[in-house]
Amino acid sequence: MTTKTTGVIFLLMAMTIALPAIAADTGKPTVAIIGTGDMGDSLGPRLAGLGYPIIYGTRDPQSEKVMQLLAQTGRGAKATTAAEAAGVAEIVLLAVPWPAMETVAQNLGDLKGKVVIDISMPSDQADDGYYKPMLETSSAEMIQSWNPGARVVKAFATQGSFIIDDPDSVGGPATIPIASDDRAAKELVARMAAEIGLDPVDAGPLRMSREIEALQRLYMVPLLQRRAAAWEPYFRRSYYWECIWDDTMSNPVADADDLASIPETQGPARPCPGP
Ligand SMILES: NC(=O)c1ccc[n+]([C@@H]2O[C@H](COP(=O)([O-])OP(=O)(O)OC[C@H]3O[C@@H](n4cnc5c(N)ncnc54)[C@H](OP(=O)(O)O)[C@@H]3O)[C@@H](O)[C@H]2O)c1
Image 1 (cartoon, rainbow, N blue to C red):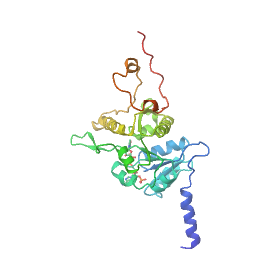
Image 2 (cartoon, rainbow, N blue to C red; image 1 turned 60 degrees about the vertical axis):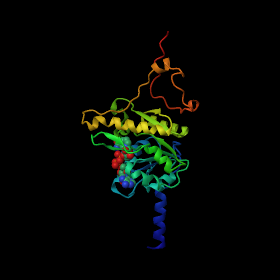
Image 3 (spheres, rainbow, N blue to C red; image 1 turned 180 degrees about the horizontal axis):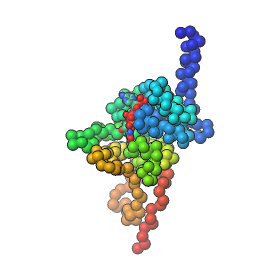
Image 4 (tube, protein in one colour; image 1 turned 90 degrees about the horizontal axis):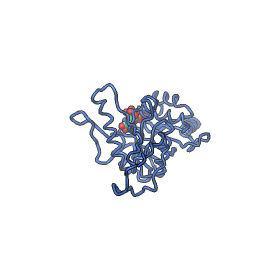
């Protein structure tokens, strides 16, 4: 290979990952989607359509599947290795199966300061056929422990990919519980979810990912039972508790003055009835 040919190849490689950290036209941060499977190939095109620059991190950036996905995603989307994609993005969305996660999440380079979204379902089937957790904590907490400087957020975990493609397919927004120890990261992901047409709710700190992962196991139940319809979570706002609640019933959370501001996708709850 000549020096000139090598130079052209290096130039082409550099061009494949040259994405702005922030889109000039939309002001949206670049999102690295790690994994081009069922969720990656739904979230990538959807977020690209909303103005987020997309770079896929994949084991085979030149594959036919990835080429088709890039064409579908449009808007200058790129594909490269997982580590390179994570390196140029502000948001890193991990869309790989849980058994592959440890290897993937420990080899993304320095994630310090990056928002890392965990969508995984670390569950497998028990002897009775229903799902059980594979972890004592949660996938999100494991990812955080492997990458202490990352701003890990649990989100987009409770829905099938078809909800990302078409949020109206269940007749209205599905609820996305979002957990993180980083308030600003939680708000950023909540805005993404609302833009997609979903109903984000603040599920509290990252350890609440365990409850989100339990919710996933619950929504799989009708599928495992081979029922005609499945569940998609939708949390309806209730006025009742707010009307009767007082702090003697339960201590408020310690960071109650610092709760994330989440875009409202439902109208206000009914006012408390008069005395
Ligand atoms: N599917 C859903 O409806 C859904 C809903 C909620 C949450 N989730 C969660 O989302 C995550 C992704 O699910 P999915 O359904 O998109 O999975 P999937 O279709 O099996 O695809 C995952 C992608 O991860 C990459 N991958 C697979 N094995 C790998 C390995 N050993 N090492 C590195 N990369 C590997 C592959 O992308 P490349 O070939 O590009 O490397 C693959 O296409 C999972 O954690 C799942 O629990 C899925």
